[in-house]
Image 1 (cartoon, one colour):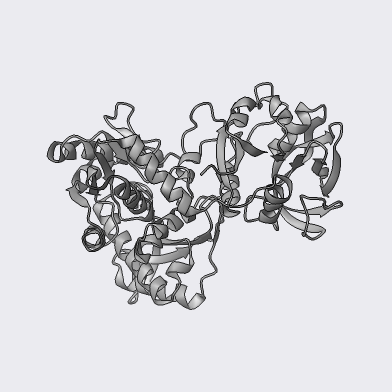
Image 2: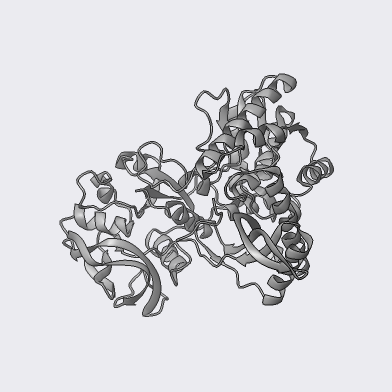
Length: 513
């Protein structure tokens, strides 16, 4: 079955994948294309609408990314978001100039004419801005339908050619009515039926995996987290015993992690699962290393080496499968001329050596975490797997700030286990996106039993999110925080202070490293 497709041209925005995700929330299939993709390719693929993403560049810069102008002659609706709006103006005889007042963060959008784009929405919306240029003159045929304090052209439309531009970001959770604006573009303007589903994705993914792998064997690093578990279930459903899963005990796991994961997969899955104990090797290589990027790359490189060593006992495998997700890709090293700014590399993206002996199989790389959970449910995985909170590939290696050693890891494991117990006991664990502890490489003065102490600090990080691209700290009840803090300080030797992180993303990230 061929689905209606909306193309998202990527100009390097950190939110490009969020746009694609919001489209899928409306049960419409979305596909991200490089900004240079020729219009004839989009036409060949049968796209029925095009969205131009935001981006970090200015259209006034000589080498800023530009699309094929022929997209405006395809006869399908086009929506430009932020940088996308400025591109529309710049390429269609409008004028863009540097703004005296950069708009970043929340602003009030005043809608003058609702039309198809703002149908069903109030006349004033709180939206999220992130731009330094402004539209000074509209292109011929356009009219302004909304404004903000610093821009009289915050939304422009050409109803005849069905070209629309908005200066804010409707895709992020911070924008009031944002999903409604996107849905109006999809349903009212592009005529999307909304007939794409997770069941379709599962069938298509299984078919694609079978076609890609053929009769070869696949090796997958099974962490027990949501991503690797869903990847394993999906691949196993496609090729069965051609899949061998390796659980790598890298010494950076949570308390009792290895035992819990192995037990879980013995109970629920008929898979070939092997355990590789390599904690000493990882810790030896991390000795003296404090830079987060070096940590990630060391862990990634060692991870692959352990896999390669495992092949000697397992036999030949052609593919290395990973649970790489969209956020992993967009936050990693820019590739293929993508203008996105680098945030951090992920061990399963930027840390892999170029001379790796495997072909990569990444069946989830176009999905967000909530989509992966939905796919896991579709595949019949149990709740404790599907709704387990995200855990970074490098494990506790990026939750121990500074040098990683056994003592710091032991302290962190015990503190993290207490937080997990209390989140479950207070019925909060499955209601938040992530809750974890961070070991800080600082010591503070305290008093315990009438004696002076000089011990370490544990930071609590508890956030709510939809897709990991944006997040906000959770207003956890004080009595829960008090109990967690009291237990950690009383039960974990080496800790005399607990702090709570109240930073949102952006500007912070969810993980500290």
